Amino acid sequence: MDFALIMFLLLLVTGGVWLFDRFMLRSRRAGDAKEPWWVEYSKSFFPVILAVFLLRSFLVEPFKIPSGSMIPTLMVGDFILVNKYTYGIRLPVIDKKIIEVSSPQRGDVMVFRYPENPSVDFIKRVVGLPGDVVEYRNKQLYINGVAQQQHNDGEYNYVESGLHFVHTERYSENLHGHVHPILINPDTPSMRLDAVAEFPHKDSCSYTEDEVKCTVPPGNYMMFGDNRDNSRDSRYWGFVPDSMIVGKAFAVWMNFSDLKRIGTSIN
Image (cartoon, rainbow, N blue to C red):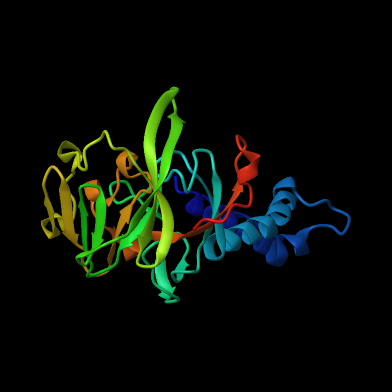
């Protein structure tokens, strides 16, 4: 069950008990009678649950990075903080936007609900805005026909779960002025056509063994992982609608395997 929904139900229950006691039960108890345990617990937990619910719904929400699709920007085991209001104020539980604040920009690291399974949260980088023509050809990213500059920063090696050693090359990619690191594995193909799923607006994309080219539909965004050859992203499952946006990632607050990452800003 969705955590926000669980929090909301607990809020209703504890708040309802507190109000019921305040306006109904209290006047019927003897002056020296002790409150029932369920009333005492509800009154104690209600303000705590309310504070957590409001903080998590409108300001900041924590997430954990479960996979290596965003290496080297984010590492497996990073606990990150996500700004919930950058892209607009949304009603909790139903996720309906009620106040427009700003829109995602190319280069933002964004958390969103996975289109193939909305109960799961994903994190990737925004590479395409509504109306953009995004091409990924021979491991080079093009936006509206313009190649996004890449600079080779040398080798980058890491170990996946199961002690699988991965050799890649690290690049600095300039995405319309937003410079960030990416990984490219020279030994893997640009596209895995057998992994491409059916998705809404798939007719906006064309595929070859070396290229994917998409026109991003209105109200949607195209998302890539920074670990380009180890990321199942918009190249394979399509676009992220505005209604599925959760927020913008901005900092690492904990990684129990690497304490040096605490406080790392997410660029």
